[in-house]
Image (tube, rainbow over all chains, first blue to last red; front, side, top):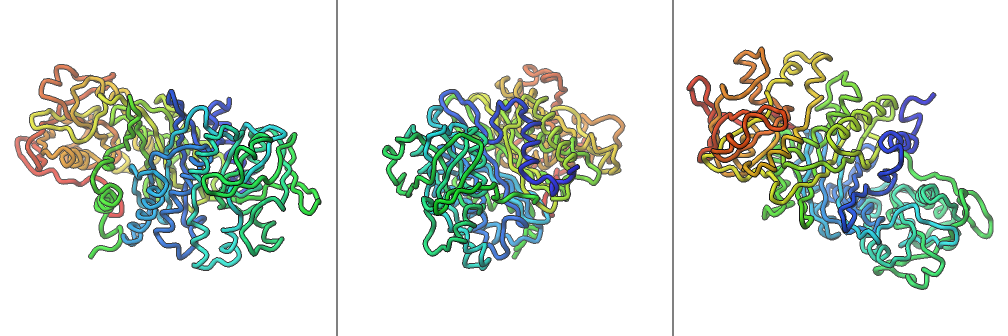
Length: 309
Length: 309
């Protein structure tokens, strides 16, 4: 009988928490953001934590760390099509931390917020043996525009923004000069907003845990399956077949994965807010997720990053 | 020249962050909650972190810990007169943590939220060497009702809800049976809402860092001073004079400290939503805060709890 988080892993632990907090599934706890009905719009609230030991490679500069802590939260607002209003940060920091490093963290947060239309509105500062930063992002989205995870229907096409693989270099060679592509991620806010306003998107999620895990999340929430073709996925240049295979499971990509009706491709074209979008597959009856490579079909397992494992 | 957080301390570090994020003071970063204009009302958002090493005594049960992590955030909503809508929790947890303990933490959060009219709406779960829990509480308050820190005027009376001293036993004798009064705190939400609706309150804050620190916060924000009489403060029974003196600086009390016009006492009476309120002093021209004990006047220093010190 499993009795530690290391035994159960993150996914099972989250499942148990959702059961406890929301047994009837009324509050959509599994989504990227919490949704609060504000009358004419929905308020989106999300919180994501960055911990030194598990997320912050040795040698990460404060600015990069602050940027990352802001960006991962803003990405959750993006995946629902929201406009960010502001952010708060609760920081646990060691007593011995250089105040210059804290200033750099804060500048990184501020840069990321300002470049994405958000403001730093508050926070909390506490002593802790290692750096731990919890960001909270608040946003708004029109009630008719919100993108959820549960609307994909068989026959819809599966889309992906941008190109995969920016993070791979650091995983292959964890050098300081590969830190920037790993952490200086771009929340796809404009893209998410355009997609939400297009009216053709049926489900959306960001890739924070990797493509395979995100496909599994969408499949489960929408009660469907997927057929995805490796050849249709856009990767950065210079990747081998083995590299591309790894990228299917790489956590820390922050592109948007979404589904839209069969005629949506003609509405959306191949760019959204200046970012390339690709049709990578199709929604099918569930629950299986199939990856097709050179005509060979195989089951795409959920092998994205999982905490405590 | 100070260069670590241990050198500067929490207050100076927060001051520097506020200067960076909001040099013109437009976003009220020093207040208990961030305030977002939603048209007819203000949205209140606050985040507070609880870390195992600095906040969680050895032997603390999960339910008590979860309750505390929720309650300290709801107290910030209370101090502005708000109605809580929901909470999110970002948790950093060790791999070896017993899943039963996590279930207990979650039950404590849920109990506290439900008993205070809030719902757990989402969160995040990450691996971390020690337990770190960041709560985020979201609330609403009427634009004409919000209580801030900056409205105290000379001639106003100073009020305090409840009685001080519940936390003292644990500080004097950190035994397991003294944990409950330390951590099972009651956010003064109903009291805050009634006070906000009374229309007579000119400033308000909770006592999270202790009475002396909270008085200093109000004094600074309102640009006033205070004269407070020890004899007018309500303490739990059985405290010596030395105990009472300690309670003036004890962090972790969550009563509301507020100011109201000279005739407010007749409007408010001596109870608000079933909780006793006491007039403990008067607002005077600043910046000094004077404590009067047996007719003896002395300066009340800011000696509440400060992180990194």
